[in-house]
Length: 356
Image (cartoon, rainbow, N blue to C red; front, top):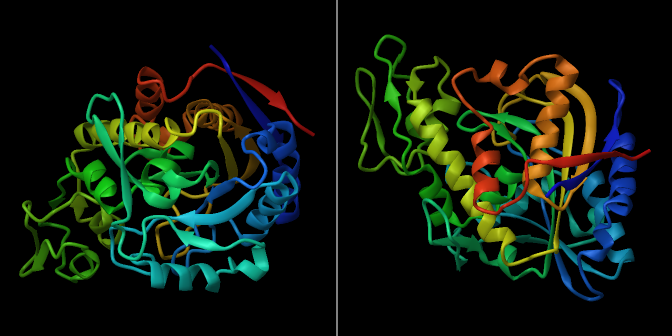
């Protein structure tokens, strides 16, 4: 059965005013006001940015969505979960401070910020599912208990999944620390002896102290959780993964974690994908990234598989090629779609409706 995906096209020179207009019109067109009843809690899942990376979605978009939810009678709050890696979002205190520094204050957006998995990433609820990898998945408590959910997603590439959209946003972003660990557990990195200069950057950012630096960096496989942070921060491309094996398992696990979020909110979740300032790496990188695609469209749907498939299809059509395979030739990013469809997360078949 086909799902419906709504598309608001952007010009190549689109501004944030255009993104705000797209958010407002897509909320109405996709019927997001019907996802919740008056006075019900509505989680708005987004990314508050990281370090000096400027390409995350700014607070003006959240403010517009919050206003729409309130007008429809909902009680919204902004949320995201803590990270595995060391940085400014590894606990709720630093995470909230970063969110406020980036403009996501209650006064600016009109709603409070609640870190979904608590102070240290341990506030969770176990949700039973029927998956290939899991029969039970830990979901962040606030994400689970909210009556409805709208996910705001900045579309990017991803070093481990190839593509990051709505599935990744709720799979990783609404997992507790235990859920993130489990999704990455099969990914074990290698160090290239010829490239490693023993600078120690990877060891500084490793969340489990699995890396020691002697003549080169050495990784303790028993301590390693496979989060990929060492690969992301290595300045010399000295960290490698066996992507053909690692990425497939990761994407399947992502789909199953997304299913745990979706299964408890049938008919109560909306997704918005922003194809704007698309970067090769995700928004967790704490340094500036040059966009590889400036502006194309904003999409909305109640099906995370359909919206992600439509997003990739639009980008492929626009660039006359396989956009994300060109960024990451070694990764089949569509596994998250096909596995998601096979477990009942959503449909890869969709009708695209243009909104003006």
